[in-house]
Length: 249
Image 1 (cartoon, rainbow, N blue to C red):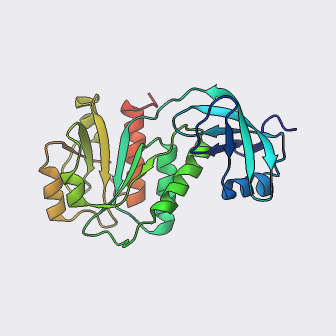
Image 2 (image 1 turned 90 degrees about the vertical axis):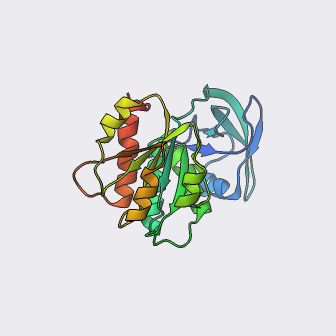
């Protein structure tokens, strides 16, 4: 019996939606079972880690194996629940491979909400939310976080601004206009809850920039002197935010 299954990146962890508690039985999905049995070569008696976003992380033992399913029993809690910083990422969808990369890396960087935003220059006509969530779950499993970002359905820029919560500030990454460096802007209002808005390939058009800047909850910021790709800008704003007021301090 393996004390704990591992892969080259560390211990094997799975996100499940079932409650986790002492002696609780959890049945894995067919895809998870395939991963455990055929990729990791797991057997009855092997142990893995489970998390569900609310009950912390639990060590669990495989107690029953069939051709397509595994049943595990929760043994003991190894970490209590710890929530990630409450940062929303609102981004214009980009082509599939960069979008997959963005979802994975934003999850690793601790974002709490992934909100696709349709702008005038957005070239992606369809957003695969199920694929985004699958990428977010896999990244959460591999990055040792205890939550999975909330993957939301796409909104137009107009609907995003109209429905924005009154208690949340919005960092507008404005590459085309005069704006203070992000560090200076956050130093002024470091105690608010935040979202960040990044644009599509080609950026926001003039009318969009004016509409965004007209809202009192918006803080325009600069991400430096160089022009960043859409996916790079999104990850840069997350990294800077985490370093200044998030959980990297």
